[in-house]
Image (tube, rainbow, N blue to C red; front, side, top):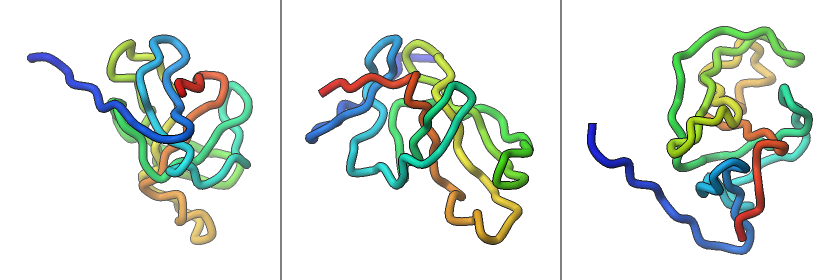
Length: 110
């Protein structure tokens, strides 16, 4: 399988995995803090790095039905949140291709 390379981010504020501190996203890729996950507050990001995407599945959420994939830390395999593949409600389609990271599973790396 080979060695897994991780990207290291630079910037003012970097969010990382709370378990292993692997870099995941910067404050500049954050779209919104007004989300909730399974473990409390969650943030919506335009892009993240160093994650593995799981298989797509349909979930009924508070904002309607969505096709999502769980995302895992590439280093320690902790579930960190999910990626929106598809939103069935037209008003929610802005989430497609975006990522949710749960605040309780993140740490400020820098």
